[in-house]
Length: 95
Image 1 (cartoon, helix red, strand yellow):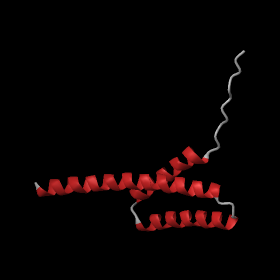
Image 2 (spheres, helix red, strand yellow; image 1 turned 90 degrees about the vertical axis):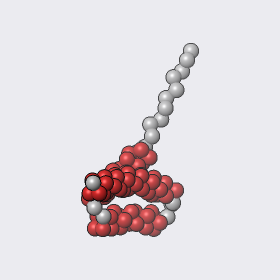
Image 3 (cartoon, one colour; image 1 turned 180 degrees about the vertical axis):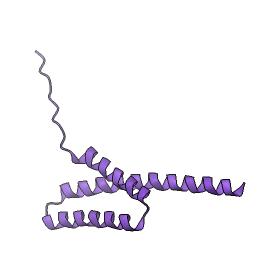
């Protein structure tokens, strides 16, 4: 009986870890994109980009592949949601 409870708690902890890493990736992806758009100095843009790349390398080395994958999915979703150029809305002329 205690083994089943321990396994269930471990599974729950891993699921929470995956969701947390996905939310962290989404938040950091938005933050990096926002800073890259607002900062005009190329040195600051390079520093922000290299910071994100360094974080991704550190996560690849020190976390499990599931958590790293969830983080990568979060960053990817942030890039597609906020990084892509927006289409201009065309207003239809009514006569």
